[in-house]
Image (cartoon, rainbow, N blue to C red; front, side):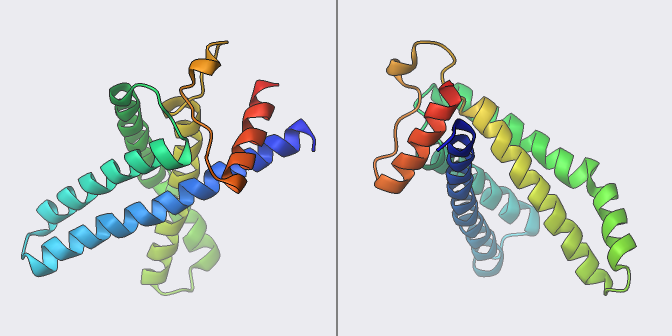
Length: 175
């Protein structure tokens, strides 16, 4: 397997885990929001604030441990995680919104307005997911850059397939 193939396979494995974490975190966050709104009678703002806060904390912990197996400083990586998440949110849902709106309405203007809005949000979510994954990998949970790698800010995955993906990714990254 070439270095390029190994690197692609490593990034694909990481992105797959990142996507799984996203699904889990979304289910937890939305579950809390809906429970607080519909079962506890909380208002929209309070429910979404608490649900999204717990969702972000869940996302950080799962991505730190499961996706990137990062063992660096917790506070600084958490701050980087929050800043990058907010920047990606602003880029995807604010800056890119006009472009995605124009694209969807230009190509699919005959669809009902509600469908168009849903497709715009889907495009924004895709942009958020890809940009946040890349930035979290390269900045938030960055691998060590020097020969200090044996002190290991990144831990090897313990199971076979993820370990192989991770090993391929790490060997390609070093070369």
